[in-house]
Image 1 (cartoon, protein in one colour):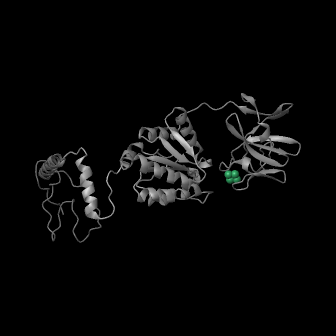
Image 2 (cartoon, rainbow, N blue to C red):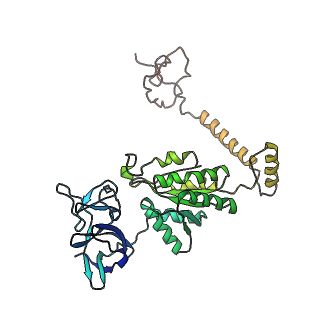
Image 3 (cartoon, rainbow, N blue to C red):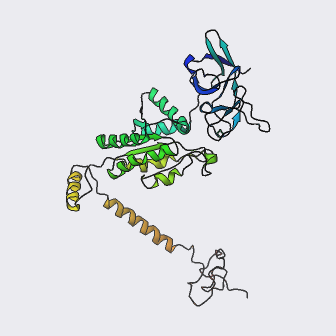
Length: 359
Ligand code: FES
């Protein structure tokens, strides 16, 4: 048997006959089911697409996944005949003092993409997150929990994602610093939208983070599958998705986006003249730098470089093109045959003109 240990199940979590439930044991969840004479404990993750088997039902002696209805034996995890996928099944023992489940030793902790993203948020100065934990954002939620344990982050759970986005928007308005709101894929994400539009219209700095369906089923109509980039595209200044198996989100391009989170110190709505006055008043108190000389110097350098390139030998192998004549070398096509492919010009050594054609 795989190395592991026995863990006692809280008595209130033991299901009645014909029921299954998600039970937390040793910090992990299992699908604990009572069916017929036995108790079964399965990995709480459907082999199909990860559905929570503990939230399913017992139907005709089968444990039915709540997401797409795949059946498994509630005690052994075995699928119906003809199928081969099966969740892991764990030993269960009913003892005098309660029910015990034998779980394998937990996998060693590794630093995940979610850990890196949370570390990046903290580095950018985001310390408060409002949101709701669910199946599609568990990895990120776990990374936030670890950041909380390190004292770097405060997560506030809410009962509706709209409250999370409004809370993050209010945090930004009151402090001038960005907060994050957090949701699951699909409806959890769309619930964020009203608070995010509140932030957009009031120019409050908010970062919205959401789960998404597994990358391999994205765009195929899976449960809670929505094009979140398109959905957030209108309300967000910047949006990106992280996909499994593809290059990880370019962390180094986010500072440009995070830079937009700088607090706005002057109102820029209403009467234009009043707004400009307010803006100028604020600018007077702000350290500014006149960059025009530096910009002019750089333009001068670039113009000189363009002039040098124009004077280079390169590209001057053929005589100047005249609209009605055809170059007799191989480097130009006639104006009347624009779709003909262009042959790479030959570099003629020691002369500015190509040799005449042999034809
Ligand atoms: S995730 Fe369980 S049937 Fe699809």
